[in-house]
Length: 363
Image 1 (cartoon, rainbow, N blue to C red):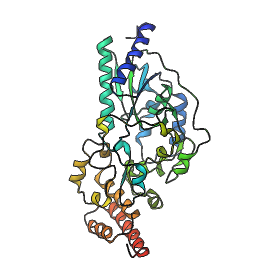
Image 2 (image 1 turned 90 degrees about the horizontal axis):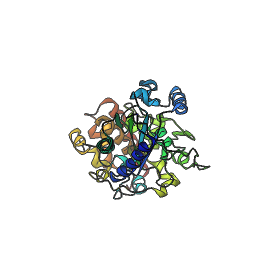
Image 3 (image 1 turned 60 degrees about the vertical axis):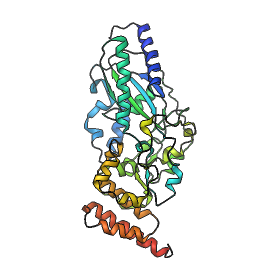
Image 4 (image 1 turned 30 degrees about the vertical axis):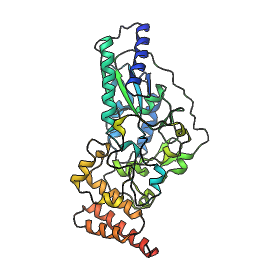
């Protein structure tokens, strides 16, 4: 397909936008493959160790920042955005201030976005293939070594904010990203290179653990999303009280971002809340055995965590919860069957609970 005329490629780009909208994507943009500036930033970030135990971020070398090395023959990258904020979910602020509830990042409340976004991208590619004939492509959505936010920025889908998330000035940041790497020489969109954060530091100020250590610089080792999802290790004790009731991920930086006043709710049924996980009772979650955990998280991005990590996270949240003899007994009852790592977190939670009960004996 490399022999396409300019008017043909322009027509393909226009067709892609129309088809993407029909498939529910809120945005589509096209970019080429040069990420040299972002490559230098990534390597400096990795050199500082800010990726923590996420060795996979460095494992693929420069394929992450060189699309044509990841998928040989790639000439263009088609980038899309898909809104995910479910309209029926309990207000985030309400959940975060109730220490008896658990907070789960809004992106994980419905069906696994990796499957949803990639499935729709395959439909988009199939529609294009039906129009122009076979061409080379691969689809991605947080599923390979891809610098998604940099590509999306270059494709005109937004700017990267101080919290390192992509922001669109008319849609905020509550959306997933996906890509089609293709050998089609498509006309690239023009990126707006201006950053629109201005003097705002809302995301830095609100981060519970101070993970955004400077504008546009995240130390993942302090990030609650990393601690509750990616890390398989014990959560550092100084950070535990700062995590509150966040048991899977954290949305505070997005909640604080002024641009999210323009965010749109999703109308994608796959992202509807499942099993009441938008405002679950912590003690009810604590009663889940592994079979229940696997059943309730089937087809969800929450399968990223193991049952052991899940119990570790819940123990921390219960340690931060209001003092309760019921909570203490539930924690104590779980000690014999717990792994050594979870036992340590349970003992920490029991200590915190007992201290809280002593402070508020009437509770």
